[in-house]
Image (tube, rainbow, N blue to C red; front, side):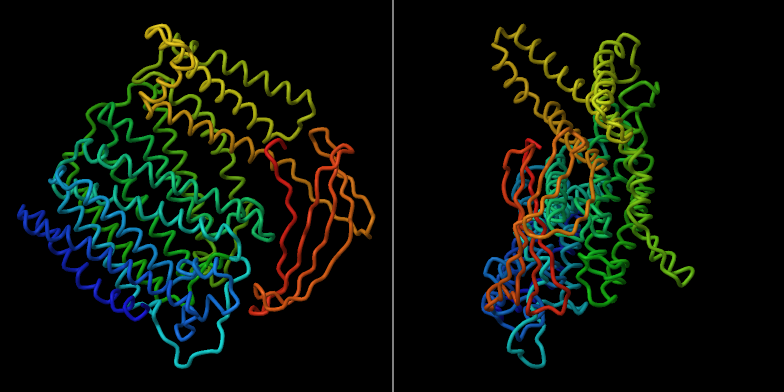
Length: 607
């Protein structure tokens, strides 16, 4: 199977190239036979990349250590669970997996548009095949071929990095890759619109589901990664502003901006150049995230690359895509003029535009902080690191204003908000926010950031709950339905609006949780078995941790463990037993590293 997989990867190269040529030729000549052949080439490339991926999987499952990739990311004692994830454990397999997912989405796009939107499809296929061709060329010619053989076959492999031996390994990378690759489809339709001159809002409507799909997977992937980092001591809690963490955040920020700004184009015919530019930027940032993870340019716990050759290839590709896209946008500028202008600062258009500027400001600050060590080294010869304090100092104020806009943007009037509109929508929510802040202060909350965040969150949640209540009550009165049925129909009949509110609720809840980090405590004690350590919570509880003792076990080859030390502590809250915490130190046989720590975590919804 492995030999077949390697052969399939090579065969995919000329087919992708041929499909690319046919796609662009079909768009220029409008010949249906060329377009049909180009679409069929998409199917063939997908099948070939699937076979290649199965070949890599078979090499992992069969302990084929003659392959460089398997020898460096697996060994005989590695659990089956992690051998299956070997496809995306390292640089070579993850690039193949990226191409496979893109080919899958390309197939779905072709199938769902077989008999419609034919004016876009030739160029869409051409763009998708161009990107697929790039990744196939990288895999075959940039020294990252997953089927590369070693000069000799080692008796065993190095095994998987212990930090990656976590159940989140199965779902965090794939969800991020799904988000990255899904946004290629909107980019392809945007380029197709620029090439064929159909620059109304149609291309946005055709890609809305793809945009939401990409944004959803990016969001879920980032959250999964945060939880994974929380469980791995040394990755900085939920978020440490690691370069690759930042790289995954960048396209999420610009995609979020795009989701909001397209509403202005759909409703008011404005921001056409802006939206086209946001699609280009978001796609480039998905490639940038892939590039940063695999280039090795910036040190990161996530980085896979071994050399810089691939970095120059990715930079060249991104530069070419940017130059070509900018030329197309400039060429089509006369057709991209806005049909209206912003009439008032107090309007939904202004709120959404301000939202976009803040999101792009956050993206720029994250990009600058991430790349500054490389920039400083290039100009001064000395690398200057940028730590979490910089990112937090810049982005916390931006986050607070964005949180406020979540409550303002969806309910303020289009064009120009009247005094009555502002009073009707915001008087009660502002009052609730102020009362919340005063109440929390009276209860002992003294940290400024959590206090302000929770007050604004109360304002936003009140706005959203009020909108749900108004809509439900109005429908119940007009349709004569019960309130529960009216609420159900309200959501299902306008999923776009009410789904957006639901997402906003989730965002507010996450901000509430992030603000709680202001109450983190770092307490250190030397203890003996039987000692009790008391930790006071800022919310009135007292936690008692009783150290029960330390146990040792010597590994017998299972899970590549050399030895394992387990510290146990019982936990009680205000005198009530709550459970047991175990913290471990592990030394692995296959890695020349310091002992790894598995932290003890007690995390429940009620707390």
